[in-house]
Amino acid sequence: MLHVLMRPRGLRQSAARRFAARVSDAVRSTIAPAELVIDQAPAIVSDPADVYTDDALPPVADIEAAAAEFERATDQARRADRGKRAARKILDRLPAGIYGEWLVSRTPSSRQTADLDAIRETYKRLGLGPVPMKSSAPSLKVERIEVPAAVTA
Image (cartoon, rainbow, N blue to C red; front, side, top):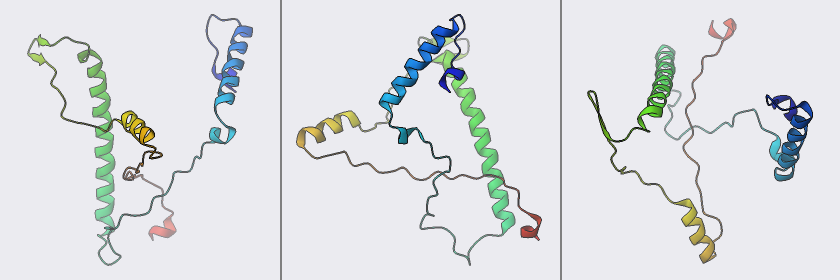
């Protein structure tokens, strides 16, 4: 399958086949076959503790409006993020200075993250075993579906 995806221009077919075979062998030697199987079904996460009870559920029309607004805002955020990335391709490479009406400068970030490499090294040096990790909060996913007429009636 890999040879179908990799058809470099300018190389003879036999050279391309040899290259694809080497890549395929390298992948097989470093990844166990069980790891090559990708589960297509998304994992289902349990609801958080503070969800509405059956008695307190808002009307379906309010839920539908909130879901539509969430989908619209998510799409708008994606488009804005793509626009920011495109602009940053130029702006990140500029030296600090004034360009027309715009001042380009850099300030130190106040954000900090744990240095996992240093933490792993410390854990290893002290014989504490693997670094304890915790999962991030589950992502809220909202998608429009087609509901059969019998369910909505």
